[in-house]
Amino acid sequence: MTSEKVTISISKEVYDKILKYIQTHGGFNSVEEFIEFVINEVLSEETAGPAYSKEDEEKIKERLRALGYL
Amino acid sequence: MVRVFVLGIDCAEPTQVEQWIDELPNLKQIYETFYTRVLSTVPPITIPAWLVAFSGLNPGYLGLYDLKFRRPGTYTDMELYSYNVVKDIEFVWNYANALKKRVILCFVPGTYPPPRLQGVVVSDFFTPSIESGFTWPPFVKKEILSITGGEYIIDVYDYKRMEPRKLFNLLVKKIEQDFKVMRYLMKNYRWDLFIGVLMSIDRAQHTLWKFFDKEHPRHVHDPELEQGLLKLYKKIDEEFGEVLKLLDIDRDVIVVMSDHGAKRMYYRVNVNEVLIQEGLLKLKERPARPMTLQEADKQGLVDWDRTIAWAWGAYVGQVWINLQGREPRGCVRPSEYEDVCKQVADVLSKVTDPDGKKLNNIVYFKWDIYEGPKTTYMPDITVYFDNLHYGANDMIGLGSVHSIEALKGADDSNHAEYAIFMINRKVEKLSTIQNVANILKKLLQEE
Figure 1 (tube, rainbow over the protein chains, first blue to last red):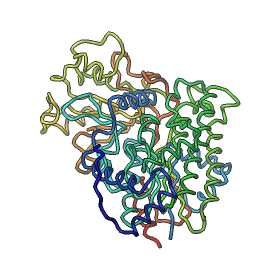
Figure 2: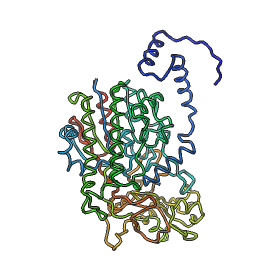
Figure 3: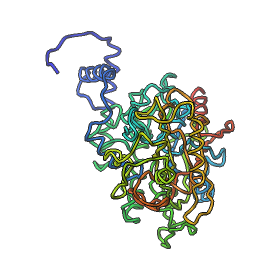
Figure 4: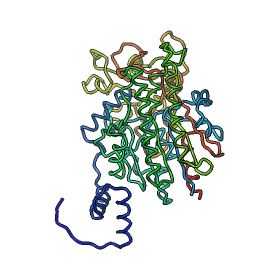
């Protein structure tokens, strides 16, 4: 991802909500990081690829074989 | 605001729960208000059963009949189930979100990759590894790994090859872990609908059944393991007691349910061997050793141009007709389809036990049980051999109709057709697992 940044404005109310959320739940170092993550998630939903990589698929198949399904 | 809590116990068998309920005091508190047996899906298998329960839809709307499904345009290639298959379906969790209610899903079968809900999701046993993104939001994963000391157990899956005592101890550890995660999320995140599903009883039924069931053909006398299954139910009850402390039993809705039951398994029916014997499945040459039909297909051993029917299935027989227009080399004309289905079903319904004694085989035709937009590739015929006291096996080259072990190992029990449903409310009578979603939706509407 490019490191070039642009500036956008959001309401103070939303900013404070995000800040409170981060302080309560952790996982993000800043409001900017949270917003970038959420936006990326929303946009990536439309172009989501397969659920499993080849390697993941083999892991699941091995497990399903042991469980008796394959 | 009414909160709805659902504890799912995969494979909890009604006859066991009814027999042992006095030894399960916490579950009994719910059981005494309302309890019923509910009919599972056809087939009674984890992924379709839970997702039908939580969507209220016939399996034909979901296209689900197993943990995998056949890839269109092929005879034996399969694709693994993932949540992507059902992402457009409205489940009770989507319904709750639409009502502005927050949800927590914990280990609910069929929820990998985790759907992006208003709330928290910890995915199920389809999670490939702890490196995978198995939570929503992603940062919850760090918390889950932290509270489980970095030793998060996704599933106990290798149970058929494990020493029974080791298996028992691992299942106890898994139950403790799962409740620890559930209680952590209950305490640390806001929720209006919580669904947590445990897999440990299912894993135990397949391997520990023979110790308590003295009539089981492979019964093993072992005073310690004789109580193994009951002890696991008791462990769940004890942990559930700690969950009840986080709930208001007079106000919160509390549901405990399973997706299907379990019953003693005598043998497996090698369904494709039956079809070969009857000339319905044609081989170019016999395989040199026992192998799955998929392997035989890859080796070019199956004569698809002359094959009428073939089967999949480990717990039930799932049969497809080689239908023109649907299959790559279909040879059954659409006008003959129903008659051919009935002929194949007639053959399979006559399968006997190894001594030639009649079995209570039950046959379901697709047109009687499935409806919806995704029925095309669902099995044309589903067979419960001896009403599920016999499992199924799709291997060929075994040279016999019956076997105890499949490639996957022996099973003590098969899945059974009834599940449990209990709730701390008086609710309308329900008869099938498909009715559960509507009950939950109505409860979620309460203020």
